[in-house]
Amino acid sequence: MNTVNALFELEVKKLLRTWIILGFGVIAPIFFLVMQTEISNNTLELYGMEVAAIDFTFPMFAFLSIVVLAIGNVGIGFSYMRSIYFFRRLRLASVKSIQFITANFFVQFLCALFTLIVLIAVAATRYSLTLQGKNLLSFGLILVLSFMMCYFIGVFIGNLTTDPKTSQTLSMAVYFVIIFLGGVTYPVELMPDFMQSIANILPTTHAVKVLQISWNGGDIWEEIHLIYIMVTTALFALLSVKFFKYD
Image (cartoon, rainbow, N blue to C red):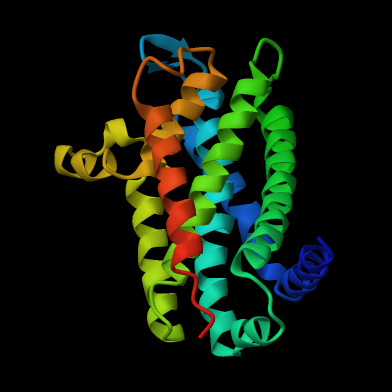
C-alpha cells in the first residue's frame, strides 16, 4: 500500500507538470457539448423515447472526457514514460506492474471526476440540465465501468510495443478512430451505413448508448451494450497486466 501511495503522489506531480493535458480534457467535452446541443435544439428520439437535446448529448460528452484521459492521455503518456526509461526505474525498484497501474488509474479517475463536475455545471447553467428523476447510481456505475474499459484499452495500447515513437503513433491512431467513429463526438445514427458498421464494432459506441439509455431512464439490459463493455473491460484488464512492458 505504501508503494501505491508513493506512486500515486508521483503521478499527481507528473500530471501537474503537464497541466495542458487536463485542460484539453476539460475543454474538449464542453466544446462539443455546446456545439451539438446548439445544433440539436429540438427533442430527439432514443430507443423510442423522446428526450431533450441536452439529455441526448450530455452522456456522450461525459464519456468523451473519459476517452480523452483514459485512452489519449494514458496511451501517449506510457510512450513518453518509456522514452525517459521511467519503467526501467520501476523494475529496478521492484515495483510490480499492478501497483503502478493502480496508482495511475486513480490519478486519471480523479481527473475524469473533476471534468465531469465542470461539465455538469456548464450543462446545468447553460441548458438547464437537471438531475431530478435521474437514476444517478446506475449512470454513475456505468460511467465508472466505461472509464475502466477505456483505461485498460489505453494501457494495453501503450504496451503493445517498446518503441516510444511507434507506441505514441499507435495510441494517437486508436484515439482518433474512437473520437470520430466511436459515437463519442457524433451520433452513430447520422453516419453513413459503412461507418455505422465500423462504429458498432467499437466498444465505445456501446458505452455511449448504454450511458444514454441509463441517463434517460431506459432499460439498460434491453440491448447487448452493457454486456459488451463488461466483457471488453475484463478482457483488456487481463491483457494490460499480462503484456505490461518495463523496457
